[in-house]
Image 1 (cartoon, rainbow, N blue to C red):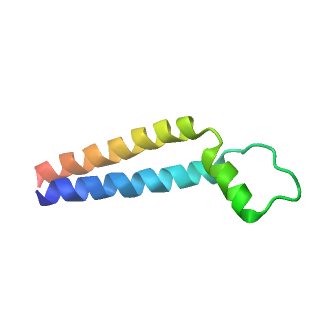
Image 2: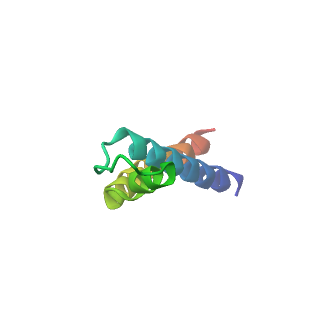
Length: 74
């Protein structure tokens, strides 16, 4: 049970980290000069959201499965 909890925790952390990196690494939509910081963050999060979710799910799944495989070896 402890190994599954660790795997799920690694999955969630990796998903959030990957999504955040993609939010600020990929060029976002054009923004007006007078936008606020919250507007910029919202555009970064929502721009190409489906692509970011799919990539984040793949990366997080790989990390989650690898942690389970490593846990079975020990």
